[in-house]
Image 1 (tube, protein in one colour):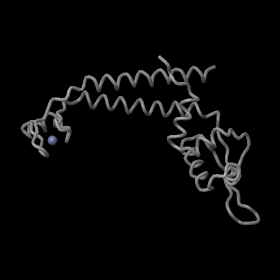
Image 2 (cartoon, helix red, strand yellow; image 1 turned 90 degrees about the horizontal axis):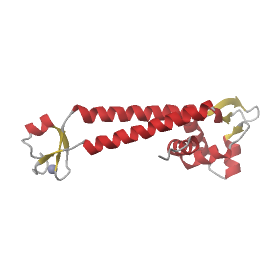
Image 3 (cartoon, protein in one colour; image 1 turned 90 degrees about the vertical axis):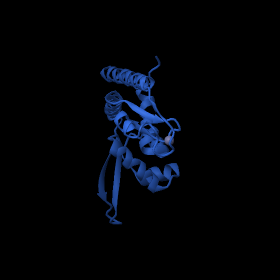
Length: 175
Ligand SMILES: [Zn+2]
């Protein structure tokens, strides 16, 4: 199975969290500290967009900043740094979080039997379906037993994939 490497994963993650501008700033790979103004001028991107992307990267744990008051203007200046060494830890954390969500989803599927309206109006637990006499309260159509085997299989496959990614990244980190 082809498992995405961390570089690919991080680009996905950065794009999801910090948008296109985030990816652009991230791939610039600045080695020194920079201000949002510098990046904004260099890339010709609105300073607010740059700032928003940088704060998203900060929340993700990839960017750091320190503030300094400009002597002349009295404005607060942000000096940014991208923490490329922390990237793997950040992805690992995100993957663990995704894995946990999948586990919960699987548990939910396992814990109950569901019925759905054949017209797709609703999905209810067996007890509720019984109360409704197995007829949809919205459209009146019959409620059908929902076979969750395929759905569960899909969750399990996704979990396996995440597991593989996690062990890959751990290996990369140890190299
Ligand atoms: Zn219905």
